[in-house]
Length: 454
Ligand SMILES: *Cc1c(COP(=O)(O)O)cnc(C)c1O
Figure 1 (cartoon, rainbow, N blue to C red):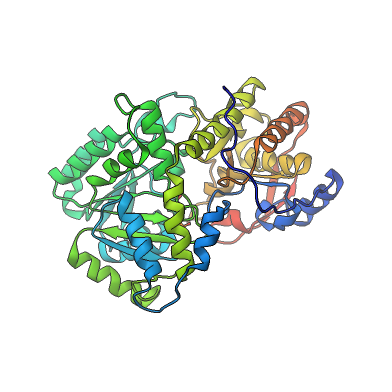
Figure 2: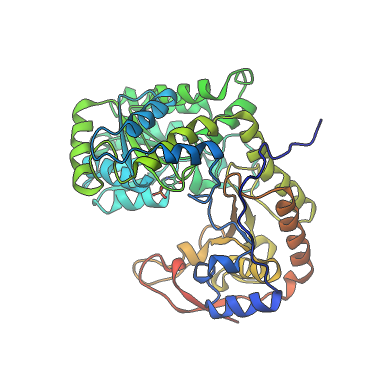
C-alpha cells in the first residue's frame, strides 16, 4: 500500500468550534489583527506552535495515574531518568519545567560578560538566556541553510570551517559549543550525523565541552535515516544514541520530541558541573528528582520517549509536512524547501510581493489565512525581528509565515483543508493589503503589538 495513514486511532476527542468567515473577520479585528490575542477556541486548526500542544497516548495517560508525587526520590523520577538514558547516555539527568529553564541553568554556569557561545543557530530562548548573562550568541549555520530555495538535505549543519576558525580566534572566551537539532530557527532543518560528529571533534580539539539542544532529536534521527548515506538500515534509537554519544551534555524541551505538554531537562557527564547545576535547580526549579515537574509529568515523558522513536510515527509526521509542501508548490505558493521536521514555512514576501516588508506581508498572510479558513499560523519576519534596541526599524532577512504541526493532533483531512485554504488565498492574494503597528511594547513586540489594516 502506498498511502501513509495516521498510525493511531482516536480514543478521546476535542470538538472544534466551527466559526463563520464573518465571525472570524470580527474576532481578528477585535484582536488588533494579532493572532496571539485570539482565544484558541475561536481557532479551527491551530498551527501557532508544535510546543506542548501534541496529543498524549492512552499509555501516557495511564502512566499519569502512576505518578508518585514524593518530594524526594520518587520512582517516577527514576523511570524518567532511565528513559532518557536509554536514548541519551548521559550520567546526570536533571529535570526542569521547560527547555528554557535548562538553558538558564546551563548559561548561569557557562555564561557571563565577555563570553561567546557558537551554535548552528541558537533558538530565541537560548539566545535570550545567553545574552542575559552578558555573553554573546553566534550563529554559524552553513550558507545553504540561509537560502529558502536550496535543496541541501542537511540545511541545519554547522559550518565546520567557520567553527574551527571561530574557535581559533575567540577560543579563550568560548565556554562551550552548542548545536541545535533540528535547527528550529532555521526552518526545522536537520543536522547530519557526520556533521554532529565533526562538530564534536572540532570542539574536542579546542578543548571545549559540546552541548546539543536536542528538542527535535527524533525528527532529526528520521532525517538521518532517510537522507544520510549508510544510515538506512539502522534503527532510530541507535541513530539517536550515536548523535548524543559524542556530546558532553544536552538541553531539552520535552514539549517537543518527548510528547509532553510540559517538561524539559538538562543532562551532562561532568560531576562538578552537575553539582553546580543541581544547586541552581534547587534554588529555581525544585528538588533534583522532580525539577519543576509533577511526578505524573515525569511518567508521561518516560512513556512519551519510548513512543517518539517509533518509525511509523516519524514517517507519518514528516510525510505530513512533505505532503502540504508538495500541494502548496503545485499551487504556486513559495515555500521553504526541502520539508523540515515540524513546520511548513511560506515565503510571504515573495508571494505577496505587492506588500513592502515594512507593511508586514507575513502578518497580512497570517491574518488572511485566519479570516478565510480559521487556521492560526504565525509571522516570522519583520514584525518579529524588525525593531531594534535603538528604536530603528528595518526589514528582517525574510518574511515567512510558519505553520507548525502539533504532534498526533490533526489528520489528513485537516491537511487537505489547509491546502484548500491556500487555493482560496491564491484567488484573492493580490487584493490583500499591508498593516501598520499602532501600539507596541519595547521588547518582543510580536506577542502583544496591535495592528491597523492599511
Ligand atoms: C522550544 C525550544 C526551546 C525552549 O524550550 P521551552 O520548553 O519552550 O522552554 C529551546 N530550543 C529549541 C530548539 C526549541 O525548539
